[in-house]
Length: 241
Image (cartoon, rainbow, N blue to C red):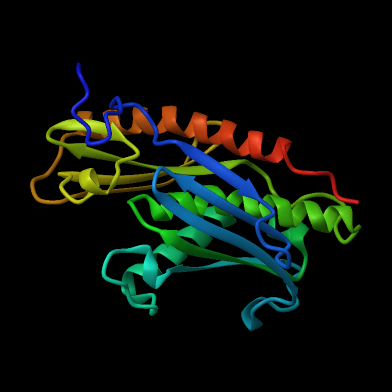
């Protein structure tokens, strides 16, 4: 089938993926991830101590903050995260905690800041994919500095969006597709192909199980490519001295 997507991609094709590491000096781990025109800066900072309700349990915590910078969208957006931003940052934290052994972290908190520099759909999945890598770099620093005996990470994690557009399941929709999709879906998967979270919403009429299956198959394909992109970014990191 000939592609009818706005940017000429096949239905199963990701937007160009670009990942830069070490983009900020002070956070323990920092990553800029780009999915096409979407650009997100992910910074992982580690501090001693945990929220009051966790004190004395010998476990760490991972939390996330998400914000879309005013210039990330046309006509300048507001700085306040709002309900959507709060929901997204909860998703990011929840997803990434599924990849961390909090007991191995000890009573420390990893705070992941995800700032959208430019939005063209897929900001939440880019935040999770880039956020995992920023957390990996932060934990590697703790191990390098002999503050931890091993990394608390238990699995590799990525997230990817799919959509149903004009009856066709497509991978990694851009904004033009996302805003007119009949179904919008987000999938968080690990490196074994297992699902961590699924979000799928009909924007009008209900959708069929077969259509969800088609999007899930596309998500699995896209996840494998994102996992490879994460590994390539890690391989390019300069050894710590």
